[in-house]
Image 1 (cartoon, rainbow, N blue to C red):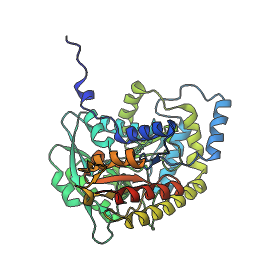
Image 2 (cartoon, rainbow, N blue to C red):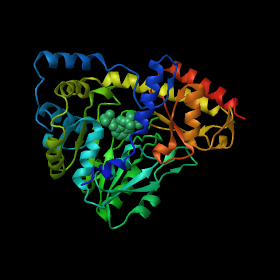
Image 3 (cartoon, protein in one colour):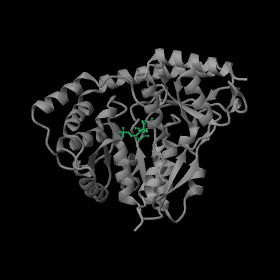
Image 4 (cartoon, rainbow, N blue to C red):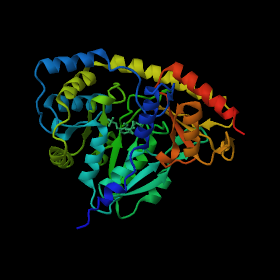
Length: 402
Ligand code: PMP
Ligand code: GLU
């Protein structure tokens, strides 16, 4: 047998968002004053009550293996949260705690997909979705979102989703509030989507990780709450990373009909055992006791979003859709194509973002990572000062293009 490596793993591109974040952090460590609009990571410290709960857990000896699908207390806490915030009834057994929402998504896909099954992904989409579908042996099928004339935000095109449905469609992967566009799905859109999924018998994986981060009065609705039929076909994914400023703690969870959660549990028991015991106990406190802290952070993101939008609108050659949630803005920079910086041509978002990092020391993620060429994603999960300084650098960079 020749010493070859896995074709599946070799076909997977590593995460561009994480790579850009690492590069920006490494440049910073080497003394370069880089402004990071790259990774979607809140700059806030994890709230004190959560940090205290982790210390208490360590001192109380909660440092051993836990049940592989998570401690009963966190599963019950997540069940209570889903009822309170989303009107969803799940027993704790219908919930699995995972190593970040990322691993809940992979577990859900592994539980559903047989080789060749298709998973519809509205685009732009988060960088990891297509790769995760491939890792699970499925085939991503893209359905382009459209930009609304009315609100200038991105909206889901039900028509494009309908056109993507085939007899092989196993699931659709939706994300609202949405990374990278900031779109928030409305009740009408969710109802249409639910009808389509029920009629055509495919699952909905609903990634609700940015649930708490909505602006301008937008409301988050979970598709699973729209009726018994769609509840039975939905896997809700959520976690503490974004809303509670807990990206490094790696706690997510999934809620779904029992047979699906059981399969995810079997897989997880071999793949990772349990998520970190200490982080699980800290997450109980986060979900139960930290509404005030997360509302303070949400308000800060809302103000940063206004600042970044205002700056973008005032730079000639740039435009953007208006986001209603999460903490990202999709910058459209196609009008700069064909211009040069220091003799280097801008041909696409990749070249734009590479030049921006090299010459202006601002990290952004090129839209190619999100199946959205012609755009770059800017995260405003950073300080107002960074937003002002970073946008000033972008303004100068654009004004120096020839
Ligand atoms: N879903 C989306 C849309 C995301 O942007 C992220 C970013 N990390 C995740 C899921 C995963 O979150 P985590 O694994 O940190 O819980
Ligand atoms: N989800 C964040 C982002 O899109 C964090 C990095 C990642 O996990 O991809 O930037």
